[in-house]
Image (cartoon, rainbow, N blue to C red):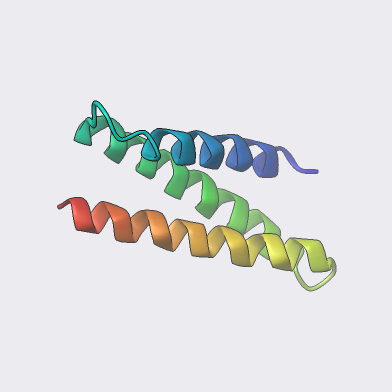
Length: 80
């Protein structure tokens, strides 16, 4: 597994954990976490897309990362 996969997984998990906590909401932290997640997903997808034609798991990973990258962008847009 490539380093970007592991970093992306850790950052996505952190984003999910942070966003699932309702009490004590802080918009600045939410934005920072979403930006980090979007950045990690973009980097991972970019890397996996380079190998997607040779490895099915890379294609699947790239698609999942692009969906997450878009979800983070959409959430950031909704925050204003």
